Structures are given as structure tokens and as C-alpha cells.
Length: 285
Length: 354
Image 1: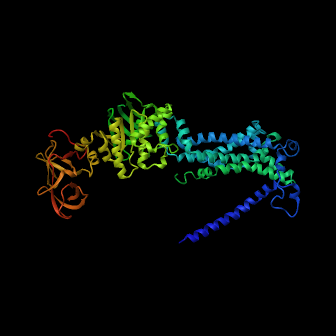
Image 2 (image 1 turned 180 degrees about the horizontal axis):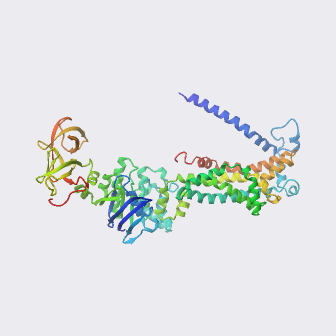
């Protein structure tokens, strides 16, 4: 009976979704297409939408040693730095967030809920407000212009939220499962590793993805803390590209595509965990 | 297999004491049921034996070895939880073999023991399934299987049947009892259901408010309850209680209707609470007059609700009842089936005449 209105409703929703995603994604797609065009094609009028003769020249240039000596920056190094920072700090956040999350979920200690709530409050600070103090702090302890420094900084910023996500999902796991594991002869650590963590995988993946993407694309702190060229990250490289190549936009397009790629891959493969992790507790699985 | 001894077990949460000194001896191979209303401390006691709760005082011993300070894994006890607590990410076989894997037994040995337990519990066809693919009864059996493979000294069950529907509950009840008769492992079983307690136990421990009310075999508790609480808790429908007094070695209701011979020596005129079970009452031509308020046939027997003044009396009979509600009938209590309790202490009056 009401099949008709429902279908109309979904068509309407789909249409709205399409409009919004076109609006959001078009510039990204435009940049992506630009990376396959030649400079001449980019400069011509009228503007072409699809590349007339698609070429990978821009990408080749980014990875060719001769260009790197010039203005094009050492992209393999930038990418390596960004991966190093993002992966290391994700691992740190995952390990400590899991241990801390477990403690918040399972142990009784005074002020537990207050501290757990406090972790969320720390998310409310605007990063910009912390730029200057952080810079002072990092230079005082000699960690400015250091990848390790940035790893530690990102880990510190990422840990509260990761802890919170993991703690909330661990709270959903029945206590009896662990008690049962302990009766079966497991130590607390074994029951955590063998029983609890496998069940918390969605939350662990969510927390990791969240942090990885944030660390990979962080710009503000990286740009004030990193000075030497060999320490720079992809986001800084990309920013300087935009300034350098206002005309040779194919380089910007190629660099932006490369920077976006890991994030897209992360979401592509982690998507189903991501929604599940954030919804943990909303519905009983 | 092991014997279990509890000596003066106390447990406090902060200032609140929930177990007030429990003493209990469980013989090797015995099936003991802890029963009582919710909040009586039975689950806390069970978890203390398991090592999941620390006790505030007293000693727990298995085979004369005090295990108070041992962590659960060192106690050689297996436990079946109310919600089964099966590991959702492991197959039935993995669930059952988990403890053996932790103990680093060789895989061939694990497989053999898991198969043997699966055989006993009729789970062989389900070994590769995951808990979410099982019915409630099957999950229950896997939880038991997990306990069996370990061949522990003691099995603990924490209200294992309360998540099952009524029919399955009766079936699993028999299965657990059969399993015990086969394995003869010392078992401590917690339930709030007195019928489960009666049907399964070698020994029942009735608990109330952190105390042990009475310990005994099912029929001992049924035939000679130590207090009004136990008398009312064990048996369904529950025992009837009426205030009465003694006169010349006999008991009469306060209205003067005769109840029967006093089962114990009482002083003349002494006030007592008299208890008698619904099945020990029969309709007769003389005796206590009562108004028939309700007739509830259940097929095999019929339950009658009677009113004598203020008090309601429940009786059951296997005879067909021809009366209708509103009729006045007379009831008599089978001789020797009266129980006397002190109205003040609510304890059974014992001794003297039998």
C-alpha cells in the first residue's frame, strides 16, 4: 500500500545525497583529472573536462630524482616521513589506548568516570590555541624539527579520544566472558588478549583509522614544528606546491591525489568497521 | 574430584556485610544446591568459591587445602555462567578446548577430550558452529562442555537454566542431573528455583540474607523445615501457616477449631504458628469449617483456596471436587503432618514428643 511513497522518499533522499556529494566531491575530482593533463591543456580555453591525452608525466616528475633537486621537493621522502609519523603514532595510540581503555572499562579506581569524561573535554580545545604553547614546549625539550617529536605530539593528542572509543566498546563486552576465561585458566592479560580484544576489533580499527587519518593529514603543528626539508611531511609539501605552481597545476593535482590516496584506501577497507565501531553500544550485536 | 569446606565465610562490600559467616561441608561427588531469594548471597558465595570475589574473612578449602588466596586458574574449578559466557569469536570446539589450549596441552589431546565431551553432550555435529548459530539449549550444553573437558575438582553452576524457556528448563535439568550421575564431579549449583533445588540436589543449602537457614537433603528440608522461611520456601504450593495454641496436647486455631495432635511438647496455652502442607489437607465431614473461595483444576490434581476468618488456606487434592465456590466445607489435616514454629523467632519447635 505505502510502497509508492516509500520509493519516492528514497528517490528524493538519493537525489539530495547526489547533489551534496557532487558539490563536495567535484573540486576533488577536478584536481584528480588535472593531474593527468598537460600544462598546455590546463591553460587553454575553453576549459576541457576530461584530459584530452591523459598522461602520467606529473606523477613521474614527482618521483624523478632530477626534478627533486629542483623545486619539486623530495616526494618519496615526504611520503616516507608522513607514513613514519602516522604509523608510529597510530601504533602508540593503539597500544596505550587499549591498555588505558581496558583499565577504564574494567578496573575500579577513584575518579574513574570523571577522568574518562575529562578525556573528552580535552577534545574541545581548538588546536590553534595550543600551537604557540606547544611550540615553546617542544623547543624547550629539544623536539622541534624532529619526526619523533611529532610522533609523540600526535600520540598525545590522539590518545584521549582513542581511549574513550576503546573504553566504551570494552564496556559493552560482558564481564562474564573474561571471568569465564579466568576460570578456564587465563591470566588477566591472556583474557584481555585472547577474549576481549578480538571482540573489540571494530573499535580498535575505528580508533586506528581515526588516528591514522588525522596524523597523516595534520598540517598546523607539522608546519610550525618541522623546519628542515628532509623532515617535512606530505601536507607541508602540498601546501608549498600550491604556492609554487599556480600555473603548473598538474603537479598540485598529482601531489594532492597521492596525499589523498592512503586516506581513501583506509576508508575503503575499513569502512564497515568504522561505522560499527562508532555505533558500538547503540545496538546490541 | 574434591570435597569443599567453607569455614565462617564473610564478605563485605565496604560497610555492608553480605555474607555473615557461612559454614558448609560438601562431600566429594556431592551435588549441592544453594537456593534462596535474590539478594540472599548465594551467587556471591559461589563466586567466592570460584575466586572471582575475594572474601573478607574465613577459609575456603578444597580437599583440605585452603585456596583463599589462589586466583581462579589455580583452583581447579570450572564454572557455568547464567548467560553461558561463550566466546563469540570461537567455534564450539575452540570454546570447549580453550582451557586446554591455555594449559598448553598437545593438540591431539585437546581434540580427543573435546570430542569425548561433545559425545557426552550430543554436540558432535555442532563442533564447527559458532555460538550465535546455536539455540539456547545448545549454548547451555556447550557451556557445560567447556567445564567438562577440564575434568576439574569442582563444577560451579550459577543459575544456568534461568535464561531458558520452561520446557527446555525441565529437560536441561534432567540432563545436568544425569551428567552428574555419570561424571560424579562435586557440583555446587546456585538457583532461586526451589523445584530445581528439590529435583537435582543431594544436599540443599537454603540461604537468606547472607545466612544459611538450613542444610539438608531435599526430603529432610521438606519433611522437617527448620524455620518458617524454609517451610514456606520449599514446596509448591507453599505450606499454610495459621496461628494456634496448645491445649491438652492438641493444637487448636485461635477460633477454637481443632487442628490435631501437637507434634512436640508444648506448655498449656502456648501460642505457636502451625504449618501444614496443602497436600496434607483433606475434605472431611467434621474439622475446621472453611468457605471455599476458589477452585483451580490442573488435571491430575485440584487446588482449592479456602478462607477461615482472616486466613487463607491452600489445599490440593487428587479427588474430583464437586463443591462450588461459596460452599462451606470442613477440612482435616492428616495426623502427624503438623509443623510447629515459634511465632517470635520463626524457628521450628523441636524435641519432646515425636
